[in-house]
Length: 415
DNA sequence: TCTGGGGTCCTAGGACCC
DNA sequence: TCTGGGGTCCTAGGACCC
Image (tube, rainbow, N blue to C red):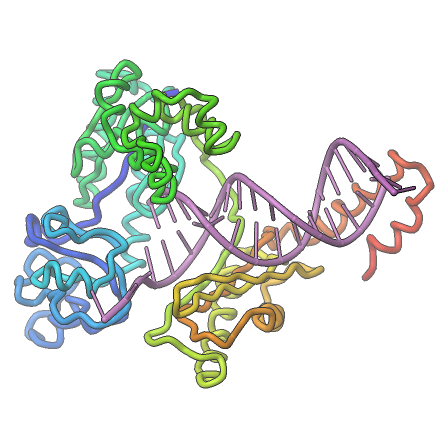
C-alpha cells in the first residue's frame, strides 16, 4: 500500500505571516478580531473578506491573559519562544507576551476542514479522516499516483487546496501510514517529503522514539530509562526483550514500528463509539458549597450530549461521568442501562446516580458527561427485534430445549 | 500562573454463563 | 478438599492522538 499523510496549516491572516501567533483560549469572545473592528472602526463593514486588511494593532496580545485556556496551535515564529500546543496560555504569556492571541473558532475550522477533505476525495477517494486538519490517503490506485514516487500527486493536492482555501498543507508519502505520518513532519510547513523503505536507517532511525505515532510521554520515559532514545536504538533491541519489558502486544508493536512495518489499512468509514461533553470551571468548585452552580452545569452537559446524539442520529445505553479534582486526579463512573436513549432527562438521572458513587469532598476542576455503547437511532427497532430473535434461535439450536423456553421471557420483557 | 475538549483503544478484574 | 476452561459483559483507569 502507498500512503499519503496530509495535514493543513490553519493560518488565515497573510499579514501575520512570520509573526508569533497562538490560537487558543476561547472564553474571551470580545477578543474576536472582526467584532472588535466593527465596534471600533464602524465606518467600514468588516467581514471575512477583509481579513487581510486588518491592522496589526487590532490583534489582541497574549500579555495579561488570565484564565485556564491552553494553546491549540501556534505559528512557527511563536514556537521559537518555546510555546506550543497544550501549553497553558498564562505560561505562554510569560514566554512570549507579544504573541498575537486568536480565539479558537470551531465553526470556521469545520468549514475549512470539509473543504479540504472534499478536495482530496475528489482526487483520491480512499481517504481516512484523522481529525479536523489531518487525513491519510491510499493513492495506490489513483491514476498518476506513482509518478515521481507520489510527488506529482502531492503537488496537485497542495495546489488544489491552496487555490480553494488559501491554506497551506504538509504531505508525507511512504509505503504505509506510520512512515507517511513521520514523513509529513520533515518539511513543514507546506512541504512534501517522500520516504522509501530504503530510507529507514538514514532518515527514520536518527529520530527520537517520541516521533512514532503511538509513543507518548509515558512510553518515551520508560524507553529512556532503558537507555533507548532514538528509533534506531529501539530497532536494535531484540524482539523478545521488547516483549518481556513492554508486554506481548505493545512490545511487538514497538518492534514493528521501529522497523517501519505497519500494515493498517486506510479506514474510510467508521461509527462513533461514544459522545461526551466536559467543561473545566473558571475556578474550582465544591460539591456542597457550589451545589447550585454545579447542578446547573451538570444539567447543561447532559442536555448538550443529548442534543449531540440527536443531531447526529444516535442513541446510547452506557452513561457516565468524569471528574477532575483540584489535584488533577481523574475519576470516572458509568452505568449501562437496559434501553438505548438520547433523552436529556434520562442522561441526567443516570449520570446523577454515577455521581453519587464518587468522593465529592475534594474540590472539582472539571465535570464531564459521556454516553457510550452507541447505536444509530434508526437501527433501534431492528436491534430490538432481530437481535434478540437471532440470539434465541442460536440458543435453541445449540442447547435444545434445556433452557430455551425460560429465555423467552427474559428476552422480551416489554413485548 | 499549572496543565482544554473530544475522542479511540487497551488492560484487567469480577460477575455470570455454559 | 479441590477443582476446568472458555466466553461475554460491565466497570475503572490509563495511554495516546488531534
